[in-house]
Image 1 (cartoon, one colour):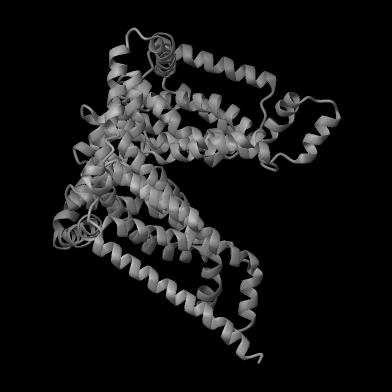
Image 2: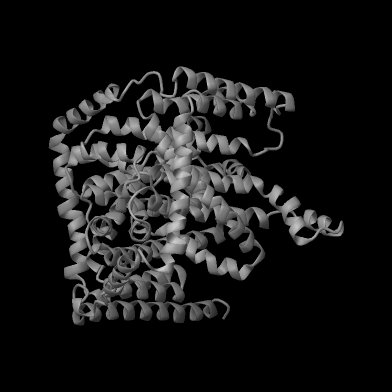
Length: 639
């Protein structure tokens, strides 16, 4: 009786599962038989029309409406004035003053190697003849980061105090990081004209979310005991915030500034589409001329700017136990007087410009190597290019547009979402795909989805094994860590230059470049998950006689699976970002449409449609992968 009972209970469960599976298959078959391939054009909502109407209103009222004369135009003048002031001051100073100031700031950390490296990084741009361009980029970064701090810190504090505000603002922050930067440039150009100002505004919107989030995190993580002690001594909420919470949250706020700087540097190339100039303009010229060597040299200048801003901001964080040198008042006065004197001497002798320049010709061997690689391995690269385009990307795109019924695609996606994250995610996924079809982006979204799937698959095949290997070898990982960090800092478009030369213009350079851009993050997160597996668990497995291979497949990888899924999640988001960038080199899909929206007349409405489609696609894939990570986390935590 005790044996038959479990069997009788198990059979109905198996029967229900079987019936549900057969019902699902039958439903999908009916949808394919009765449905229509491709989303019907007659259903298009033509969302671009009201957006273009709004654009015409802006053009007609730019000179006399109060919104422009009293709000937007003065704001434009303020931003432009700040940009010009910073740029003029930096160019007015003798060339050696900025490296000297950076050296003195970094010397406080008592880390000689880092101080010297940071100072040399400042001088690198001048050494390769990019001093003026670097100053222009630094000016754009400075004003953008300043606005992010001024707006982000109060917003972060408000969200920390008000849960309703946090719940309302968080989705906006998610959308702000998901929308391609090219889409931001369309309304900013419409409202603020061409030049550095729209680039600065787009940079602020794109880089603001980490400032808000990390400020909120820092405030909420302040120990409750410190707040209660402040209250007991009679401090008001404002005094507690100013004297207790903000100082204790300062490391998190500095980290937010650091992330803001990194994200802002990520769109310096895209900002050149509206006349921003600087290092981004040099990178675009390298792309147009297909000069990977020159592109690498300029990219290293961007990396140098990012490195300097990152290390200088981190130097102001007081890490407990870290050595720190404090200048006395007399020493500080002497330093200030010395800088003023050095500036005066430099101005008298006309030492404003950098004294020498290597140029970029020393990177010509890189161009020669890429050309040699293209000609030598053409028998491999060309068939690979044709196979990837003809037999993979086009087949996936054709299946979603011409072979499978759109109703089947929507329901199948909802079934996958339901199996991963439940009914709410299933409904959201289905509605999101329908909206993509209604705004006329179904074919372009299908092409972008095909490129994303292929690039993510290739990234996983490379990043996960390498990450698992490095996670078990800390010394080798420490050696490769700076290389991986540098690969994440190089502007994404640079990766596409050599692959355009090797594979010709088309979707393949974008896919391969996306793989190269995404795998550093995948490697680092996978390695982190493998490295953080509980040592006692590994020792217990070894005690019971498990071999290293059995420990790897039976213990390490299962326990590191949540981190691996998060790595896949991050690679998906990076690949999607690169898919937009790849539109500049013929990648097609939503990336090409976003560039088209920015560079052609009447593109404002198209930009709104593309932006909405990208947000839906990115947020859906993001939430699905995060839900998969959460499902895998529970067994690991319980175990």
